[in-house]
Length: 418
Image (tube, rainbow, N blue to C red; front, side, top):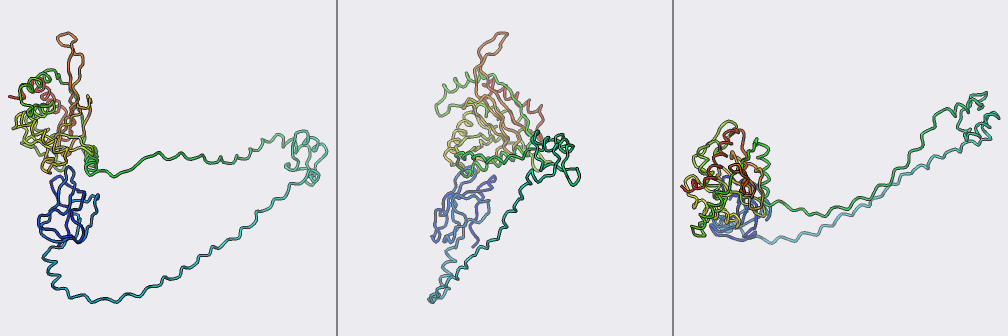
């Protein structure tokens, strides 16, 4: 039987991590019984057995990540195990092998090399042995010169006055180089710890790097008058059951669901190098922050759903994401993404496009600030929207028009429930 391989549990799945082996080597399992628990990019899934058998050998230990299709274990189907058991003759006892003596360890002899003694230095000749004229001796003594270091030019190498004067005129020799300072004491290492990336963090890191490396981003920011939106949300939530209350993010999702069909370039993706795929349905991914990374569950066909339906589905998907219970179909197939950091007080940021989508909308916090209305400075509420766009698919003017349409819808929020 071929080895058990890492299954592909969704179109976006490329790698999987063995979280736990539910069977040990040598243990049997039944058809459809779970053998292992794996973590994909966004959720945890059990790997079932396709037929009854026995786990022969585990090839990938717990905690390791391998690509889809890689062998993770050797298994033997029950039918093969029974056939082999019937065909195998009884095994005769084998004689014990004689003990093997270890060869003696050869002693290693270090060969010392003779080091020649340091070469001795002859003492410099004493002044008495130096041939010099009386005048040269007197002048050298007055100036503190060592006659032994002066070369004589007189008869027989005798040092004369001119030699001493020449030595006085010559530049002084450079002082010997100072011995190198002893190395300083190395700074103690900074306390730190290392840990492997979680599977989710690895996927986030890979996709973010891919996006910034391959997609030419450009960014547009627009301020929205959030006062009408705030009033609308308060009145809407007061009129519905608690389970049907909406968040500001739900309102932004609904506004994008209305605007995107009018600007199909932003609801598209690049296929290869020269083909643009435009989607009929609007499938909006909503970024959800988890301790181990970011997941993006997708609300499908938002263009056909009411505000209440979008709110309920978004809430359920976020709860499943935090519980690690998303299925591959729930976090794949998005055509546009919204990332909201307003709940953290972040007023403005630029998000990285979720490839292969054409754009992502970053939503900032609603803030109180003074605004000018009818020539008067009055209190106001503002919310910043920043769209990151793939310039290969969308031009700046079209992205700006889309952002203007989203702004119009949010500033006239009754349009979101019509």
